Length: 239
Image (cartoon, rainbow, N blue to C red; front, side, top):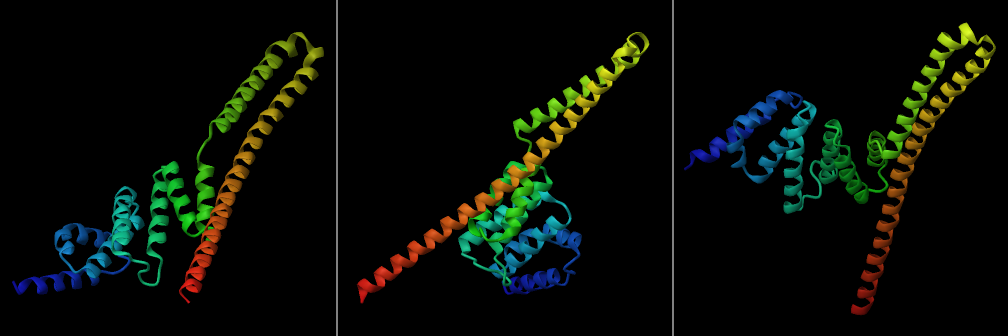
């Protein structure tokens, strides 16, 4: 059985010999020797799995990447890994999972992940801004109604213009100016409804993300104050 450690060492050495930016090579190697990689010591296995997960993201394999993110998050929790390579790996994995969900247009799921991340780090602006972008990409029912209203107004404008050209101008020339004002007003109204809806949606998305981050910051601060007070009370009681 002495050959097993040598095989494991060679396997890990060959994996580490790959260029860090050779993402396709990392993916091929990991998937070809996955069973052997799973037999490595934990740190070696986790190092390989982390590199493979990152390679999936970098190459746009977002479906596979999400699956591996879930696995990494489970391992991080079970092994109580607070940091890896000086990074908060749990937060980073959550962020990249949200990014993959975003790329797959799974905006509600990405929003859920980002809200969990904001709860952990409410002062980090990057997940907050990403949450805002995710909310912006979603289309609430009221926004779809404003867009439908815009389309309806544009169609009505087209009808008014057609009536003006084919009926009013040849036969009722005295009403031409009235119809011109009418279709200009309708066109302006359509543009206003569309722009107002988009601006309102952008503002609501920004406010929702910021207000959520502020609430999470206040909650976290409150919890820290309570924990500090509790620990102080216990310390005084012991003394």
